[in-house]
Image (cartoon, rainbow, N blue to C red):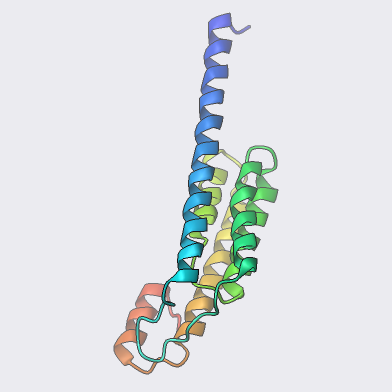
Length: 163
């Protein structure tokens, strides 16, 4: 049997862990929301000639960002569901042709899923899906770029984004 002191220490560590987890999720939500808002008010990303510009940010982007971040609250209760919802939110965001974003929730859920000792097959699958969607986003941006130096940079940086 555990002593009263061990139970008390375990309970307070769990409380601190949950509090830190909630604060981290709220920080991620704030960063992603502000980044999405910045894409509304700022110039679209256009780093090189012939770069295909993304679509304007609308209310749907904010909903997807909110769902992707809030799904992190489920990671202790339903870790696989949280992983899938967060990854799907990222995929919807990227495939909807918004500015590149919503990385933090996916990175956080992938890390915590593995760090908490859950099965590694789901995080591996979701990481691969996220990576492939990201490559597709870069490919869509690079499709009309003709500068060979930029194409080579994209190939090395993103693993063959334009073949």
